[in-house]
Image (cartoon, rainbow, N blue to C red):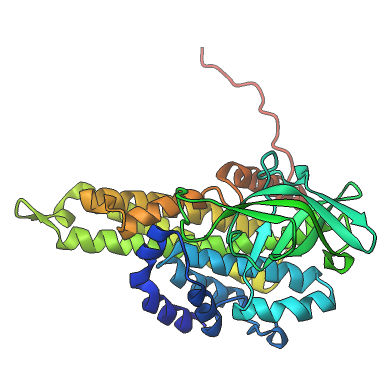
Length: 383
């Protein structure tokens, strides 16, 4: 799978800047990615997946992330919705949708964020109301990746006062899409705001019972999303570090190579440390996810936190090393600096991640039964 991802990345490398400039990821690329075995590959083989390991999923995502963040976002959202349906969907839902998501015949969207419910998804106001033999959905969702083209949306709302998740096909009457243009990063990920005005779907489209929509369905999707975002950031940072190093070695100013300036060499050294550390944390997350360790969620949050910060730092320094060339609209390092900034926010901002990690550390301390430190006694002061 990793070799296939690297080969696919090479075939689209020269197109990524144009996708970013036009704000469109061609539909043929989606089906080509499916044919190359890149979408939802951790699904069971019966649904078109490959039972791929977390490590293989991560490394493959990094290869794509080193070329195009919007294409990586496709892998992320397909995986998020597939993971949620694979774990919590009904047999009918899995049989109908998972093969299509795995091949790219259907594009997924995860519709959770609202104007007053960004990272606090418990505050979503979208209503899911019983209406005869159907469910009626009303609300407005914002910043939905591939929301402009999605064939299947996993919508988070409230049913009978409890968080719920429901599947909505993209051609349902009452669904309106408002494409977002010129956003800071992920410009080809066809982000959109969505209005659901009394959209009706069968009751069988409910994913898990009401009350499980946030902690179970959305939780599974977001965990998968953080993991692939983390690895995508590693790929992005690797690419920027390589580009900065190559430019510093080849660029000569005043008969002196950039790489011979101590400050430039120090910058490259810091980038190497940041990329290596982020990569190791992602590998650790892969290991604990593979054995379903209870700490896997926290390890994934940590990996995403470190990798997104590394991507921001390394891409910023790469632009500095390139100088004016890094400011070209089609420059890889300039494009990736914009994308990396978005990665600091998506699937859990720095601040939210820090609180989660602090809570994990406190719980781990309490579980360890560590004794409280002794109160210090009086300190003798020399006379």
